[in-house]
Amino acid sequence: MADVPDNAPQHCPGTESEQAGKTSSCEGCPNQKVCASGATKAPDPAIAEIGAKMSTVKHIILVLSGKGGVGKSTFSAHLAHALASDNTKEVALLDVDICGPSIPRIMGLEGEQVHQSGSGWSPVYVDDNLAVMSIGFLLNSPDDAVIWRGPKKNGMIKQFLRDVDWGELDYLIVDTPPGTSDEHLSIVQYLSSTHIDGAVIITTPQEVSLQDVRKEIRFCQKVKLPIIGVVENMSGFVCPSCKNTSQIFPPTSGGAEKMCADLDLPLLGKVPLDPRIARSCDEGKSFLNEVPDSPAAKVYLNIVQSIQDYCSNRVTEEQSTT
Ligand code: SF4
Image (cartoon, rainbow, N blue to C red):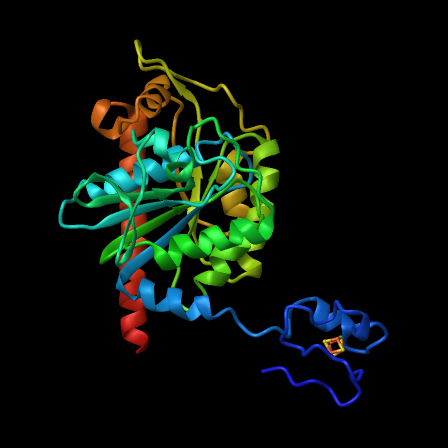
């Protein structure tokens, strides 16, 4: 609790109020800067509610990318599909890309709607053990634009975490928008009373993508979000006929491999471009099932195994420290 300082003006609105640092009474107050920054405000009670809700979720994984168009949502969707292929595991995929939700289409759920029940919003199920939630389910048409400012986006993320009836989950995968924006800060803040296992960062080999990924990595370090590893997408092109691989996006500065070596981060895998991946996504199907012989599918499965190992090791480490 932040106390009102002795030297505060007489009409101080209260350091924890929404108006702290912003009213005319605050003009000239020595505390104005810190109050206006929000640092003195009371924590949002939703953080504790979300903590309670997430107590039945074993692992939370965020999927991040510096740029759009690098295959982040495709990765999130197929991570969810691969984890749910073990039908003893309960998996959910949450799309917090409020302004560009593509998960409903990739998961073959366009036109689906969420339902409200006594225990909250019910997610949409792809299979008995694979649930999905996205703002796309709340729009009238996939072409509707969501033009929202920060507070409204934050409110929706809060609802997704607190008001969805997630039930008992082994894995919650969170697909985030590209870059570091309101959505990222919100999700980290709202999940601060629970645990996030870590983030998987998606990039392509070109320096223009890696530059933004370095910013994403700095963001993770700043908010103390562990990085599970980096995935390089579009890493070569596999000809569907002859199966030969060629470089479409050459790694001019060494690609994700060099970046990971420089920054001491795990490179989870390099996924080659395969036009069958895009076709499966457009049709709302898992390419892991559609084209299991694709070199890309094999790389994906290795990456998913590494993520599962990371999550299991994390639990073992936690147990050994308690
Ligand atoms: S800046 Fe405003 S809210 Fe903060 S202590 Fe001063 S008067 Fe109170």
